[in-house]
Image 1 (cartoon, protein in one colour):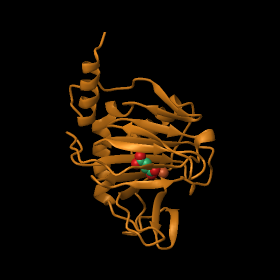
Image 2: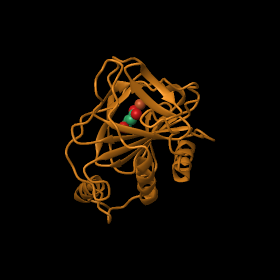
Image 3: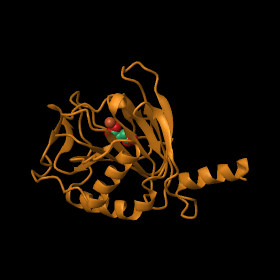
Image 4: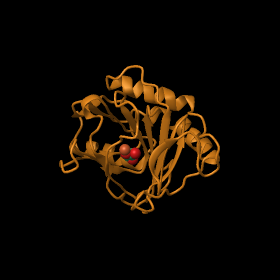
Length: 229
Ligand code: SIN
Ligand code: FE2
């Protein structure tokens, strides 16, 4: 039996990344038809994921991209995989090279491919092979406005989104921009998967609260896996 106090402590420990807190897969939470939250699913792979992110970032550093409307994004981004998502004054698109140095994006680490495939399969989408991984870095105050992921060629494949580091509130809306989103608290290791009838749902992230994570520091890192091309 667990008291309310124990539950509060568990949630607090998870949010701060306490290494003694229980981590690991603990079942899928239903968000909408075609959308689930896998709490802690990525936690067992945290060390290898963070090392792989560091390697990608050494070759393709984080940068603040500019929207077609000319606004600098508060989220810093980079990519790995055959295709990388970019935005500038010319628009949003996928590109096979990093516009910052003209080089191909770093290849997708095997640990990323495995995690994305396993998470998608847990959510009911078999044989997911992403060719694009957008890496988002949020600092306190950074946010991502409600948007749809629709620059991909085929909407038959799901989106797999992995949260590492400090907590965030994920907004998960409907198929119309005006639909009221649900608010989902995401912490280190959580994975959200949406596809099928949920594939084009609007989503975003509210401005991050200041916090510190033992492994990631004062950041939230998000990996968004997609089949783009
Ligand atoms: C995204 O929509 O690209 C990222 C969402 C998130 O950071 O959770
Ligand atoms: Fe998105």
